[in-house]
Amino acid sequence: MGFKARARANDSKAGDDRKKKDVKEGKDPCGVNGCDGWADSTMGGRSLSVSDAEDMWGKSVVVRKNRVRVCKSCYRSWKKTNKQDDYY
Ligand SMILES: [Zn+2]
Image 1 (cartoon, rainbow, N blue to C red):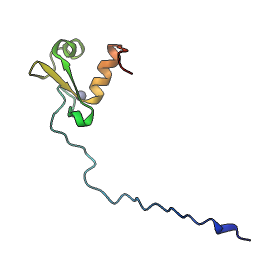
Image 2 (spheres, rainbow, N blue to C red; image 1 turned 90 degrees about the vertical axis):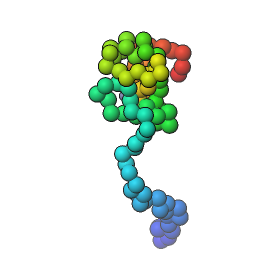
Image 3 (cartoon, protein in one colour; image 1 turned 135 degrees about the vertical axis):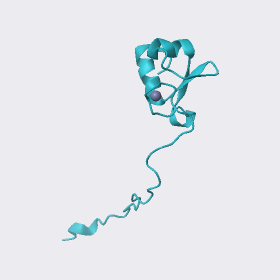
């Protein structure tokens, strides 16, 4: 009858206590107009060359120091469009 002998030993108490801010804020806004992502490298942002970025988004990009900083998702869509297999 020792049915319930298997008590949950590791009842992990990792509750959602930390409710800091679920909206991540970066410092580098994405350079694609209309996108509100962040281009911080800590957040997966990347920088593209101006011509690469303009191929994809035309003139609606913000150029900084000859580069266009884009957020992760913009970079991914760019990557998709420019099917490059150089990194997996
Ligand atoms: Zn973006």
